[in-house]
Image (cartoon, rainbow, N blue to C red; front, side):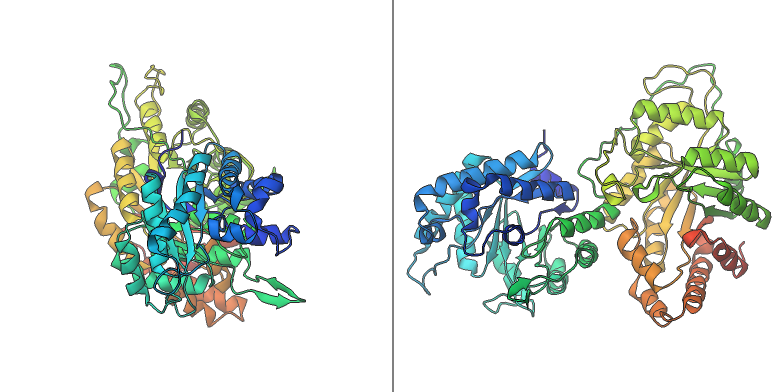
Length: 614
C-alpha cells in the first residue's frame, strides 16, 4: 500500500510528470481538439502518455483534466459529459499509475473573470470548481494540483472547493512572468505571502516561463517559508518553426536545472508545456543523484547475544587498513573501477603501480552509476592475489536480497576480502539499464547490521555460523547533501549499527566540508575524504550534473573555464585544485581517497607528489 502523499513528500523530493497537451499534439492530435475529451474518445492514447511518464520515473502523474471545468467544456458543447470526462480521466491515470505512483487531479482556471473584473461571483466560482473536483474524487485521485492560475482570488476559490469536497492534499500553482513576478505584477515575496494565506499543502509556480526564471523565483522565496515549494517549468519559450510552435529546451538542460532546484530547496519538481517523458527521465536522474528514493527500507539496529565461545576480533586486528587508521597513520586510498569486459589485467597493472608508489589500499566501487561491470568482489580478489595490496570492496544493496547479501559477504571473507564499504547503491534508472529492477531489501544501515552480526558469529536470523568474520566496516557520507539533517541522522544510525570508518563523496567545497566535519565530531570515527582531480571544464560539468552527490562550486567552475580551450591546461588546473583541497583538509582527516578520472592514475601521482602528508 502506498504511504500517504504528504508522508512521502516529507521524506524527499517528489517528481511529477510533464506536459499532456504538447504530448498529444506531438502524437498527432490537432490543436483545435478538446484534449480533455480524449479521456472518452481515445483513452488508449491518454493512458499511453501516462505510462510513458511512469516509465520515465515520475512519482506522480496528473490527470488529463486541466480544462475539464464547466465553463471550458461548455464552450466545446461537452458540459453534459463533465462528470464522465473527469471521472474517466482519474480512472485512466489510476490504471497507468499502478501501486507505486500517485495520481493528482489536474484543475486549471475556469476561463472566465471573477468579480470585480468579471461577472462571476466568488461563490459561483467555488461551485464550478467543486463540480469538477467531486468527479475527480469519484475517479480515485490521491491529491489535487491547481495549476497555471493567474489571479490569486480565483486560485483561493479552487482551494476552498477542494477543502469543501474532500480532505485530499492540494498543491497550488501561480504562473509568473520573465521577471519572476506574477502576471498581475506581484513580486515573489508578495506572491508567496498571498499563497501561504490560502493554506494549501504545498505551493509554487508552473507554466509560461522556462527553467531559469523559475529558479530565480525559488531562490528569492525559499528562505521566507518552511512550506513545501513546487517548481514546474515549461521547456523554455516556444519558437515558431515552419508554422509550428516548438519547445527547444533539451531534456539534458532541464535535468541540469532539476539539480539546481533541489540545491535551492525545491520539494516538488516536474514539467509543464513542452516537456515530455525524456525531460522527466533526466529530472529523475538528477533526483536519484541525491539519493532520494521512493523506497528506503531500513533494518533497525537490534541487540543480540553473542555465542559464548566466539572471539570477536578487535578493530585493529581486522585488516591492515584498520590497523593503520587505529595507529593514526594517514591513509592513502585510490579508487579503481572494474572493467566492462572479462579481463582485469589493465586494472591489475595500475594497482601494481600504485602499490609500488606506496598507496595503502585500492577502493573498488560496486556497479557505479548502475552500470554493468565485472564483479567488484572478483576484481578485489584478483588484485589482492596478483598484487598483494589490500582492497576496500564497495558492496551495494541494489542487486541482492538479504539471502544473497549474506552469501556474498561470507564468500568475500573466505576469499580474503577484509574491508567493506556498505552502500545502498545507485538506482537502476540512473544508469544504462533503466528498465532493470532493483532489490533494496535493506539499505546501507541494514547492510551494516548484517555485517556486524556476521562479525559476531551470527547470521541474519540469529543462528550461529561457527567462527565469526572480522570485516572492517566502512560507510559512505555526502558532506554536501541537500538535506544535511537527514544525512546526519542516517550517519548516526550507521555508526550505531557498527560502522568503523567513513569515506566521503569527492570534496570540492571546503567550507561545506569543514561544516560537515564539525557536525560529526561526536561519532569519533576516522574520516577518509574523497578527492577527484578534475580533468577539464567538461569533466566538472559532468560531475555537477550526472554523478550522485557531487557539487562543484562556481568558483572552481570559473577557474576551469579559463582553460577550456586547452586539455593540458585544464588538467593541470584540476590537479592544482585537488592539491589545494587536500592541503587544506589533511589535518582534519584520517586519510584521502583519490579517484583516477578516466582511469588515468598519473593524476593520483601528480596530486600526491605535490602535497606533504603527515
